[in-house]
Image (cartoon, rainbow, N blue to C red; front, top):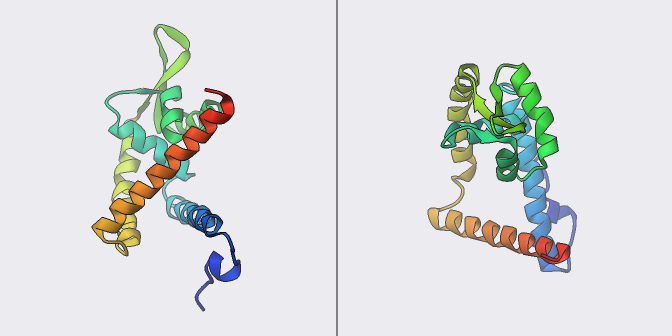
Length: 161
């Protein structure tokens, strides 16, 4: 039996609310799938995201830079990076001119794990996204970019910036 979609269970009079809930619900489903996928390789999808960003960065990243790119609070990343360092996946080096800041790099073991998981991850993405044409993917990216910009503007307006 095929599972019902959120909008087959909940009825919305407001089309904007329905669209927003569609984005939200899809995000939750994607997060659930990511957890299942990554449990074989890593303790969380956050670790994969950290590793991907470090692999493709031009050099070591600070925890602040990493937190900004992941859209998470720096304090939340501290524990993740500590566990990854303890597992031998990354190295945290103190920055010479700022003893409170760390530069993060993947270890050879971290790169090895990433090499094993990145291919299957890209295959999973390909399988998931093949339901869309190139034009639809471009439109989807445009929609999400516009929504993210609007959210950022709303946050700035609320904080008085």
